[in-house]
Structure formats: C-alpha cells, structure tokens
Image 1 (tube, rainbow, N blue to C red):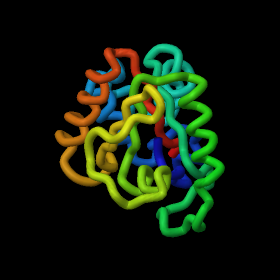
Image 2 (spheres, rainbow, N blue to C red):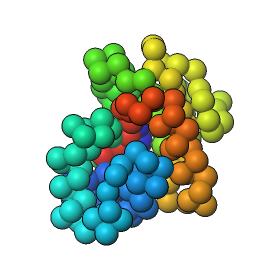
Image 3 (cartoon, rainbow, N blue to C red):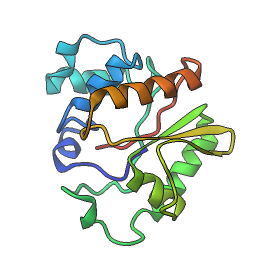
Image 4 (cartoon, rainbow, N blue to C red):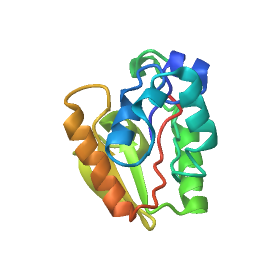
Length: 165
C-alpha cells in the first residue's frame, strides 16, 4: 500500500515505473520471477504489470490517494480518507495474508498516527501488516530483506497492497 502515484508512473499506468528500482527489488526478493532486462523497458514492464502481477504473482498495488504528485507535501489534509476506506474494503474482500505498507507516511496516514517503526505492525483483521522502507532511498539490501520477510510470512501466496505509483 502506498500514499500516491508519481506523475510519470501515473502516466504509464504502472506503479514505480518512473524509477524502476522497486521492480528490481521485488525480483531480487523472489516475489517476481522475471529477467532483469524485462524490467527495464516500459513496454515489457507494463505487460508484466497488466498480465502477470495479479494472476501469476498474486500481488497488487493500492494507493491511499490516486492523484499524482511529485512530492507527498502536495497532498491535502484528509485527501487519503477515501483511499483508506477503499483499502479496508479491499483487505476485507480479498483477505490477503500480508499487507505491506511502503514508507512511514503511508502507514501514518492510514492509521492516523505517527507512532510506528519499520517491521511488523498490528494486524488488520486476519492480515499481517508490515511496514517497509521506501524503495528508492537507502541500501537495496535492506529492502530486499524486508520483501523476503513479507514473502516468508505470506507462505508464498502474497497479496502485496501498494500504490499505483
């Protein structure tokens, strides 16, 4: 689950396509099984996202706000409320084993509190909740480790709730 899309990714209709690092992290963590070369091209990445992401990998991205911005500071207070309701409905309907929040801002907005640290959080219903670092800042090895932890907890069947970035 993420806060909102970047304008470039929004335009391409593929989350994190503006900076493809997250896709490489998903691949290295074993959540995807794609050739790295297929993650570099916008066309092949769109194919993976449109045709494989949900049906083959059982992954999904959900934003709290669908409006693209360069920076989260451009979001208006309370703009995430509709997305929170949508995310909760998605979790109730699809019953994922794990919900992964990407970045503290996303979890803070979702829970209405700034009290959180990276790692496992309080469950949402029966879904375990994990807070990972934002994927394009800091060492990739930390993000891969976090995503592998999420994969282990999912038992291999993961519904990763994240942004349409």
